[in-house]
Length: 255
Figure (cartoon, rainbow, N blue to C red):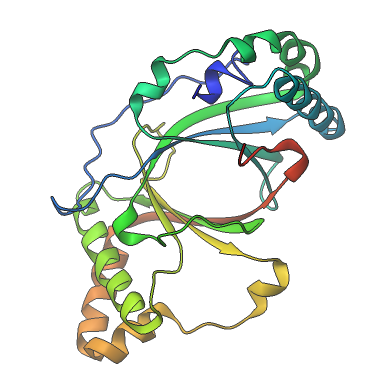
């Protein structure tokens, strides 16, 4: 399977990847999850419709050529600018070595119908953390994504804390609530981790759920909750959240 940079947006000028020596504090027995290539596009003001139509035209070409690649396009619902996120799963780094002639057959459409409408594009690679995440992929079309940028001196505490919280959630509810990812490539303003929480629709976000810290306190007591919560807060340099809605017409989540 071809990666997104060598496929739909190969000829888009992408910001360089910034590699770090980020350490994921998982147990030695925890399995490695698949990688995900994520490209964020900021669309020029007034060019949203043209961008959408360009991607749909490229998609039609790619499917007609019987391409195998799958991807999802999410539109950010808040924040500055008009932002779309293109996400594609990769089982391992070796996927970056593969080529896709089908994508090249449709490349002229990218140059003519997509590139002119993009103001900025950045790409990063993230990795799913299965031990902390729901075990089945979501088919929901709305996600809330929480991003966590950590203090370097305290970052090693973060995943053990999340593991404890996930264990309490699993004990109380049968499974974690979302999908945790580590960022394995980063720019200076990137988070270290993010968590994806799926929702059927916006109305589902109105449903009140038990606070995760209250669940932890019910199992372990207030003293331990306060201590763990204090440690958690000490790791955080910056936290932010956005909602994203899947654009089905621009996506191909499955073959």
